[in-house]
Image 1 (cartoon, helix red, strand yellow):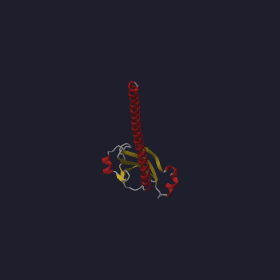
Image 2 (tube, rainbow, N blue to C red):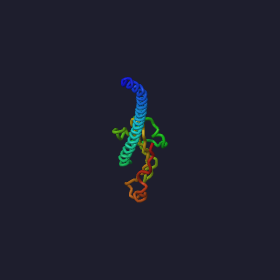
Image 3 (cartoon, rainbow, N blue to C red):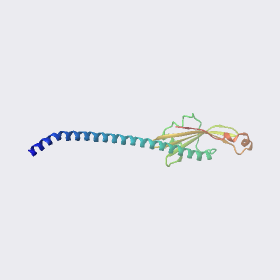
Image 4 (spheres, one colour):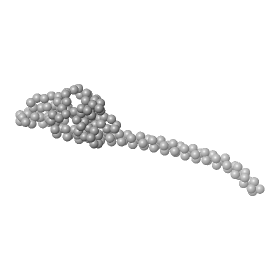
Length: 172
């Protein structure tokens, strides 16, 4: 009798064990899907952070190279004809490789052009356009610079020193 009653007890508990198994499997699948979604989200956040850091690195490198160009502003090197402000930043990468002056190759290829906008006895106004070529695309920096003719003493006193140097920056 005890073996017969044990068999009926087993039959009674088997459907419950199957139900528990199905519930546990559903919970595991839900947890797996949530984990996969969380992983995908983390990957997306990582890619966005890398793009942000690369853009900041490019901007820092462009500013560093701009400082080098500003020190030799009155040189005739890489002086181009005056054009619209949007002309040089929108040129193709091939155009920059062929016509632009390379100032840096590492970590990004950086080219620049200099345009003399205005000139008189005391001041020269230049527009500098720098372009960084990276794997993620082309980035530019454009600025206007005022240079004072240091050879004529009257110019040094006539033009206030606060008006010389960088006048503004445009990023793209």
